[in-house]
Amino acid sequence: MSTSWLNEVKWDEHGLVPVIAQDAESGEVLMFAWMNRDALSKTVEMGEAVYWSRSRKKLWHKGEESGHIQRVHEIRLDCDEDVVLLKVEQNGGIACHTGRHSCFFQKFEGDGTDGDWIAVEPILKDPGSIYKSVDTEQTR
Image (cartoon, rainbow, N blue to C red):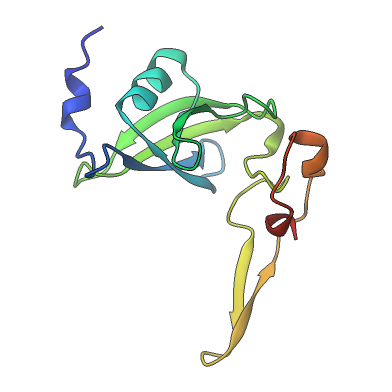
């Protein structure tokens, strides 16, 4: 398969592009991640989301440990060609490592001068039962 389409993406200075994963049915934003050329190419090849983990410095097949894979229904590139949108079917209904449906579970509530971030989505599954190691600070 020709990969010339990858040249249309405006990769940043680290060879990465930001990616938004959106529920294909509801339109809800599930998560934000990064891809390099290999990740985007593998995503197209497999039909499942593959990201670049900046912390681990390696490819990360979403759901490889948890089973919560993302089946890709559609891939879009924004007008500036520097952001990718994946429309996905989220296996198991959990996209976040905190055991929630979406990574965007914290909502700002305040009066304009002061406020706080409040968790507004429930934990659907205990992260300790999903992953070998979990950042417990993020599971509040």
